[in-house]
Structure formats: C-alpha cells, structure tokens
Image 1 (cartoon, helix red, strand yellow):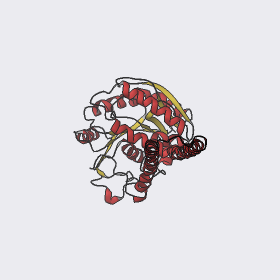
Image 2 (cartoon, helix red, strand yellow; image 1 turned 30 degrees about the horizontal axis):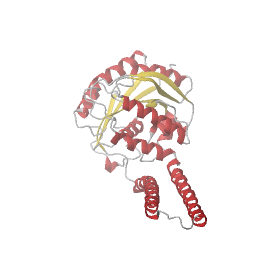
Image 3 (cartoon, one colour; image 1 turned 135 degrees about the vertical axis):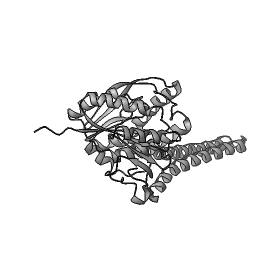
Image 4 (cartoon, helix red, strand yellow; image 1 turned 180 degrees about the vertical axis):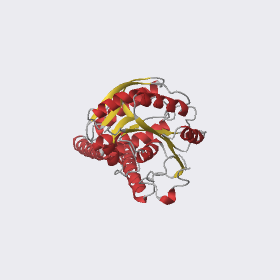
Length: 333
C-alpha cells in the first residue's frame, strides 16, 4: 500500500500585488510539482486596492489548488498571515511574502529539514537585495535589540519566511492576542527549530510596502510590548535614577548652605531645569504605561481579528477562530 503523501500549504498575504501573483503561482507550481509534492497555495487578499482579488479568483479557476480569501478591509500583514495559517490544511505550512523576495526555490531545503524531524524551519537572510541602507540598518538594529530585551530566543536576521509543522500551527491557533508578532510567537512555542540560509531577492514587481518609519515603528512596538517588560522596567529605572539625583542635589544644597551660607544660589534656573527634567521622565513613563494599557484595551474588546468578504476554494474549511459566521460573507464564491 502506498504511503499517503504530505500536503504542503504555501500561505502568502497579498496587498496590492496583482503584478506578482501570476509569477508567484508559476514558481510555486514549478518547485513543488518538480519535487513531486501535493500542495495548495493560500492567498490572503488584505484589502488590496488593485486587482489582486480578481487575479486570485482567476488563478483558482485555472488551478483549484490555489485557494483564496479576501478581507473586508486592510487588517495588516500579521493578521493576514494569521488568517492564512488558520485556513491552511497542510501537514507543513510555508509562510512567505507574495513579492517573491523569499524565493520558492528554498522550499525543498526547508522540506528536507522538516522531514529530518524539525518542526520549524526558518529562513535566515545571508544577504538582502534591492533594499535601502536605511531599511538594512534599522532592521539590523531592530533584530539585535529585540534579541537582547525579550525573554525568548528570536533568531537574528529572520523574517516571517518559515515552514511550520501542523502541530505548530495548532499551537498558534491557541494564541489569541490581537497585536501579533509571529516572529516571536513561533519561537515562544518551542519544539525543534532550525534555520536555512538563503539570499533574499529584490521584489519581482511593484513597490515595497513596509519601508516608512510610520509603518515600522508600530511593528517594532508590537514586537517589544508582546514579549518584553523592559520598557516598564526602564521607566522604573528612570524613576530610581531621578530620585537618586534628587537626593544628591538636596545634599549638595545643604552642604553649600552650611559651608558657604552667604553664597548666593541661582535657584530659579536650577528649579526650572529640575522641573522640566522630572516632567519629561513622568511623561515618558506614562507613555510607556499607555502603550501596554492600549494593548490591554484592544484585547478586552474581543473583536474578531479579521472579517472575510469573499473566499475561493475554501467551502469546507473552518471559518477561522476569529471570524464568527456573521462576520463572513459569500463563502466559496
């Protein structure tokens, strides 16, 4: 009796990628068909403003192995990736960008490590093509900072490109936080993990979606606040430092009064500087607390992570743990 083949799911969030999707499908098909794998390609349209939804529908009609869902609006890459993982039915699931910067030609090396017994195989970028010096520098700083201040071992120079075993996917489905940082959530789960080094290519077509400080800063804050109490500890440290400086200043004033009672003290400027310093420390501390409090507020509201407008080829799939039936429209369209 022939052994059952493993089903390999490839999940790709999509935002304004209509110029790339045909090439993504062709390369995934060439690699996985060439390797003799059973596969499906799950494309998650994250509220694109171009023709991405129409391209996904056409690809599904052309090849039923292409599955798709389309959100009611843009919810962000991490949420789109989560939805794709929710709907993927493979024994192993490969999460990748749709822009072909993470080449499908790396899949066989990942599958080889998975079949050798590893539950997570993440891509380690040996080089990055077509990115600005600012993006490269900030990414390098970010990865090393998050590596130092978090309580988990997040591999350096890795993104979301990784293969995950079905039991890892099942574990992720039990993690319900809204401000998601998958690059930290997967290492937190544990199991056997290993890296595969690859060259990250330039975008196949279109413009980069994640280059501005406005987009990168909230992502960095989500990463830090999800896995580290360091900012709160930093606020406490600043409070102790301020208190110590205040005690030193009081002792200095007392000594000056005792040793040189007739020495005038320039109190107005000193008082102004001290007040401004203390006010800054207090505002920074309140801001840090506010970041954590805002995330708690997001969690307690209990809203679904995403709302689905359309789907293709997923009639029998679960609706997703965050999308109740009333939130899903036109399933299987």
